[in-house]
Image (spheres, rainbow, N blue to C red):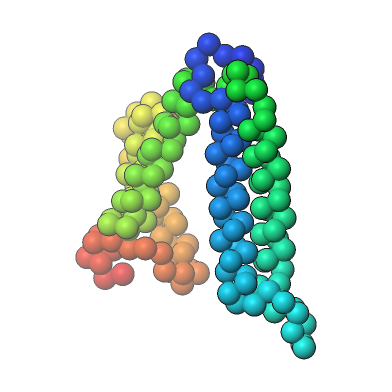
Length: 168
């Protein structure tokens, strides 16, 4: 997997991604700076106010983002070094989409049942494991995590209808 090479199947160019990311970082920097001004970014009688350091971190982010933006906007748009190719993007989406579904399911089913489904799905779809391996692993791993977090550490994690049914 080479980075920054000329490709026959590019989805998006490095230049485009650098412009997008620099713009997003600039927006985050502006939000950080604005909120730092809101809470106070000066120096008080007892030292720096709450927004002092975040303001300057935001300022450094903004200057860096604007510099990156300027360099990439001036760069010739004919350069087509690929940020990602179609087959690489497909591999990323193979992990990203199920992970996003897992996060959404956690809100409705709780983390443990969602983890059972997530692990089983990945073991079947990506790993091509047989059902006799998928079932124990996808059930025992979340069960072990349940015991560790809920019983030993007493750290409650998001629960769904199954845990409620069992009184947790």
